[in-house]
Image (tube, rainbow, N blue to C red; front, top):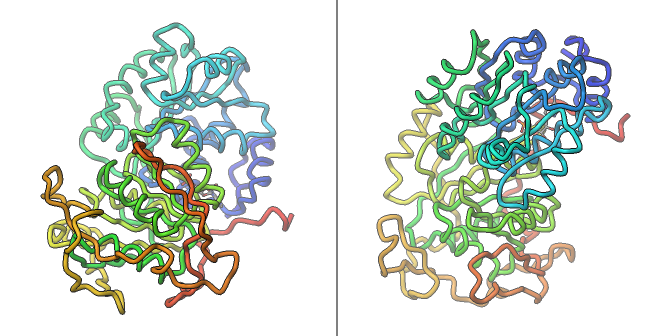
Length: 463
Ligand code: AMP
């Protein structure tokens, strides 16, 4: 099936071609016709399935008929990163349409956004809080909005945004088309659907099950050996870009610092960082100059980076949905990915819950040559366990060698570590700065299988 079948406006179709998309993804195949017809829609799909284009393309098509210079479509996103990515997608897919999109979110000055609003845009992509600020101050007129898209609604609920969503909906006075996308459908989201959607079409892609293009492995380990095992996994795996998830902001900072000290090019991404620091971390990771991003769930939400080969759960997430969202960062279009989860005795229940979702046991692995019996001996750089957290008794790590000695020698000069590791700034808890050294080894014990395409995308050079 090609995109021609939808009869999209030719200017929208040109954007699709310029992006190199050939075949619609399943969520696009099912959503685009219904949205073009003006139907309300519930899209049950996670990121990585092409869900953004599933609403962007038919909405651009519809907006071609609307008067210009006023806000006709509003997309509400849970995070700034997702808002930016969606806005970028609209501007890229819509580059021949003359339609303009801007993003609006908190954590940055409002003036530039205000200038963007005043220049006139047909599409606004916004996080709820800052959007309401602008509306309540009279900066933004939503009275012409005829298409509302609520993206990642379950995340919105997790982050406590549902009251804001309801307020936003009340500001929309015109009859409208409403689209709601969510990876899962908890009761509160069902309730919202009943309140704000009219006779919606429901499109479901792969339910909330983790994407098929990802292989999953559990690595049982004692809490005090998590960091050494993480380093060993990084050393022995064929990784490109890696996201490491830790449970708290503090743990994110700590793990990032430990990896940085070992010479890895790493950034932390957690909610206490300023927008500028977050952007710097994301840009470094996206460009590939930083190979590892250590993040909390909320900070990494919606991150759309195609080259992520590995998601490593330093800590098991608290819910199966959070696992699904984390794993959705890898195995994206045209890629396969690997998900490693470091598990301790405390995680048994979550493992059972995940296995119920997978409908099969998860593979458990032991890393050959790793000293699983090493004792907790040095109380310096340790990670407290979940139950210990907040108390003074820390866990311990066994990797006391200097960073350079603990790394294998790389035969590839591109990948060989240098000596210029930047120590974390003293007194600063945000460690989004970049190590100047390269710590990922080119010695690979277990090369990954060849990547199999999930769906086709024509390379730009082929055109
Ligand atoms: P999303 O699920 O919207 O975050 O999309 C994930 C990635 O898939 C993005 O990088 C999109 O550019 C890409 N993508 C979306 N639709 C297609 C398509 N039909 N063919 C190839 N790539 C696509």
